[in-house]
Image (tube, rainbow, N blue to C red; front, side, top):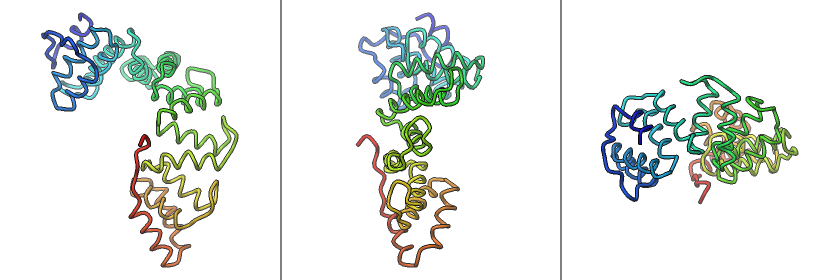
Length: 267
């Protein structure tokens, strides 16, 4: 296909007969098996067969420099090709490039058009990012209620960041009725999966009794788990709680953290 052939050029072999049953899933499996050129063939054939995401995935290879030199301009061209055919994945990614001014003009309005179009197609990342735009008033009028609506949609698809942002909205009452118990419930979902922010928020909730019965042993345990995932604030909280615990309670708190196991959200 002329658009992709002219864009690929270096690094990828494009002289091939497209597999009859080429599809994105096969391309991803081929890529995970370490065959980058084979994956490109699958993605390009899928695009030529009408799957807009084929160009998106080739663009990602150029963006990450997999199988070729990193080339952000080519990536942007491929994302634009995918957008022209309606790829929600490409709409979100190209929208972020416009938001940050990465190899395309920084243009908040265009960013919002692309990202929120992705959201309206059901892409969870697009929904989360569109919510951020409404929350911050970038490219769209600031509207915390619409932001929350998009985060709720993303949360239904188990989007971790969206679930955390809903937790924050319940904490602050910004876009939702303030509800510490509901906030705790949201953070419990992401904490169970090992998300540092969720773990830290549970630690704070147990330390203060916000939305849950106060429990310094669990507060220390969750702060310990968040700290080991790199949160400096959690380390400070853990150490502050430690001085409030007797030796037996501190041992119990450390045992709680040691025995704790993360469980993916979608299981």
